[in-house]
Image 1 (cartoon, rainbow, N blue to C red):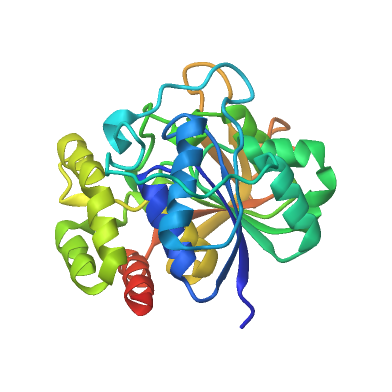
Image 2 (image 1 turned 120 degrees about the horizontal axis):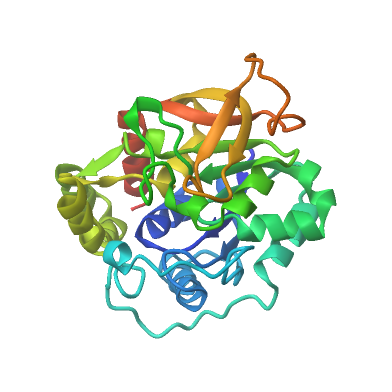
Length: 320
């Protein structure tokens, strides 16, 4: 089977790091680029973190620094209470020997897509600022992208709504204008929202088993996720933590793990509901409005959580 060529657009981030480890270790993934943006930390820190992860995981893909602010306004304060002061759970980091690619993230995306027409999947697990800039500067890449797989949003399925406001998820809320433009472009988008990521939990027992069976990668996951796990324990009473960004990887490689809906997707870009994601399901008719002319995209609404957890564990154990 031909490997899936992946550009990983990320703001590392504990869960971003865990998803990048999954991509780096999966035998059916050809990781061809990593692009960074602000979000879980400022842009200098997320880029430093991505370079550390390249060094730690040993992948060859270039790392390019991207957007440091949203399309409109200033960046929100990094959630240090979730990811620690350094964005990676406050683990000790060595001196960074890897260097960032000289290209801006959006330029790397453009060049990689043009060089690999029809076969590149972009897995976007942060704000979509880099993607918006890439398609704005090079609209010819839109039909060349195989798929965009996003971790973001919340559609109210299974009782899951927002995590930074009652209706908004952090990645979308952090740059709602970019998200609305990306969802409205004519490339296929599949979204792993909170509706499924919060239904998938790595428990303490699961993490202990991973640490015991997945060698140094399992030990790394245990170390980097300790701060993150404590946040989930204190804020949500969880015995473990939600599987956010790795769910986007699972959706890209194993869509059969998910039930889905299709329809036009919009993002609220101002007012009290800023960052809310709304789908107009295919087959339902409404008066003319903001849905008109929008492409049909895919959202995950249900998940076989045990399959996702087994997929993550088996990938790491198989590469140990």
